[in-house]
Image (cartoon, rainbow, N blue to C red; front, side, top):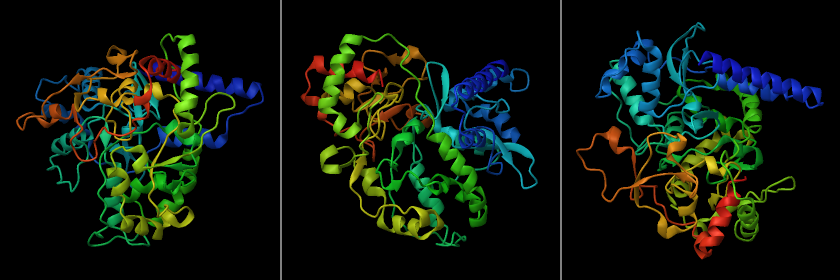
Length: 450
């Protein structure tokens, strides 16, 4: 792995020299932001080093010895929790885990960072900014707590009931509830009334086109502070202010990210026909692509889009008002009006399965023909291309006819996506139903080119 990381970093530096040679020097803010995200930690250790080495005892199967077979142990750890190898130097840890930072500046133990959710892989290649569609955050946190000798805390909300989803919204709401408007700590949480569901993790590279962000499109995409909410577990207002310039650089880097290109052969004639279908049926909301492409930043009403409304309705007025009263909302307040969901740009859509804001649809073909969407399905064990469906574009899946049995271990149950659960419905976005089968196939072929 060190050799591969060195090769990647060398390629990045070489590309920077090429850009400079052609008069297009890299943006210093983007370079600083990349380092700030991939090489810097901001939180204290959540678990000790021993917890990482001991956690294998909770897997229910023999684990490689972390002392004598560290690479095999790391690979097993990654598979167990749905993490991905870091494509940058990271002390041998996967993306999303890093050494914690002690008050004296020393680096010990483990802590999570943004890339636990926003560092994904496809076809055996890790990509910073691709949503992690295999993560089991609940298992990761609970097992590390047990290995640390702590009882996993009771949670007032579902962190994730299935692999690949996460309830970042409720994490943020809970952190805000224990802060006053001046961000001083409270003894008792504010009753903010939020009820947000677990969601699919969107790709960061879409931010470069957006003027508003998050699934409901109610937050200005220029807001740097919105990206800092998850530091509320530790940071004071002054510490947040001190970090804001760093997160401004991180935002510049996020907006510079580009998606990976579709790696398989495409039917050019079918894709050309699909572009015509797309421009008639999809471009109004999702924009156009190519050198003259435009993105309309459309927020679609709930009654029009028809997708599961829990995320849009779960952001309570009290939570929005409290957020807007704090430092987070001073520069760019959250819009008080709820409309629906933002139709995202579709750059790299081939790599971002499963689809819809909650990850309830495993393939583009099922997205474009609502009657083919499974009510329950089992997610594949990894994002290797052996599990990728080149025809339907997305992940191969196994239909599950019954809800997970109560006796099924939670680790195994979280491979099953059940659309009957709160916030995980797979209805709506039925615009593709009116297309013929040939039009759908043409459209899918075009979407591979984006």
